[in-house]
Image (tube, rainbow, N blue to C red; front, side):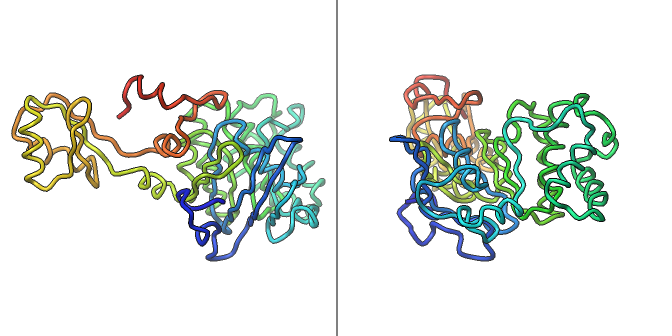
Length: 340
């Protein structure tokens, strides 16, 4: 059963306020004895940026395939843009855009030719084709390259063109399956500027899958998925807050004296392996007052605010690796360098 912050709260399972763009109830996909997706429940509001965060093989792409009618659910129900993904598959396809992990552009055509071909396939009215091509190319900042062959594009430019293509027929929901894999951080950031502009100016709902923590931060809400099940779902800030408070770690010349001084000043503090850990509401603002309050020389100070890495580790016992979705066991992290 999926719940917000992975707690047993059925009332928080689905997004019940405002119009819903995607509604999923008990969706399951089996391949023989293996369950790739297991009884997932969630909903996505219109205009929301919603992220599936998890390692490769967690069930992210399988879920998107079912929602985009590319795979038939074993059980459960799902609607996209108000249409059932099984009984109204054609209607679903008319109302979605999809950017796959692999590039699907024809690199021997120009950007404009790729878009024009897509417009014909989707039955965009002839009078709307040129205005829509101009609009989507402007949204992804490729207007000046519209006549160039895609073979001359960088990987980031090609990705942005695929997003433009996915928006050409004015879909209600745009699905992005690992949209920035293989792109450098700067190009990923530029691409996300384009995506957020699409949401803000076109009102499209964005549903993405990713294993990049920084990418998930763009989402209004995040569902953490692992081994086919959603184990936590909430806003990025709420997920991070569920892990714990901000902390300031100290090593001092006299930890006993420092501990007593901090407690007298009302701080929540405990001994740690390397010194003292102080729990605070805002780690950046707290460092100065804490160093002043201890009354003894401070050897080291490290401030830490929970991240999505901490969230994933908390709920799964391991970290998402940047490449290949491999995970680092909890004991390996505990015996490695400490993160702060």
